[in-house]
Image (cartoon, rainbow, N blue to C red; front, side, top):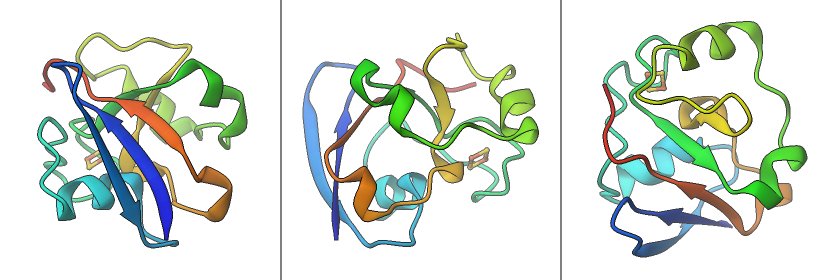
Length: 107
Ligand code: FES
């Protein structure tokens, strides 16, 4: 298990242990984290699993591929420096303690 910290739009924090190999989106969905909608179920085709990665973590994550980059542009108020789609973030031990900020809304 890997600790993923979801900071909700109201500032509250949910600490969730997510199984290695799942996605950060699945960790949210399976634990009823509000604000991560994931309409397309993880196919990188909707952008409703958008989060802002905490500043300390941005450089530690694998870079988004072109498809994710393109889809992020359709997210609500994307921030090119720290927006990611959680369905594309695969949980590994390296992500232990990852902090993601859930936006106020999705599309
Ligand atoms: Fe649709 Fe991530 S769940 S893009």
